[in-house]
Amino acid sequence: MEQQYGSDFISITDEDGKEYELEILSTIEYQGAEYLALVPAEEDEASEELEVSILKSVTEDGEDLLVAVEDEDELAAVYDLLMQSLYEDGEEAEDEEE
Image (cartoon, rainbow, N blue to C red; front, side, top):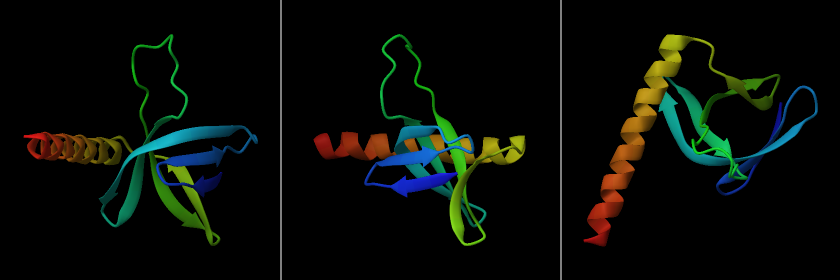
């Protein structure tokens, strides 16, 4: 999977050559690895729910790749850290507004 990092957006190409534009919501470090929480860059107006994907950043043969997290315990731990981080960021934004 090829990736090109921008400021808050990323373009990835899957193994079938299909390209996806994604927005980076957050990055989390867990047990020495980096994880990205991503949503589609283009909103699907028909869908009321936001589809968030959590991918792990790995390096294989000198190439940076994003891979799906297959271990359920690892995914749950990263998800919990992500939710905690987003909650804390929301509280900081509210404090700045006051």
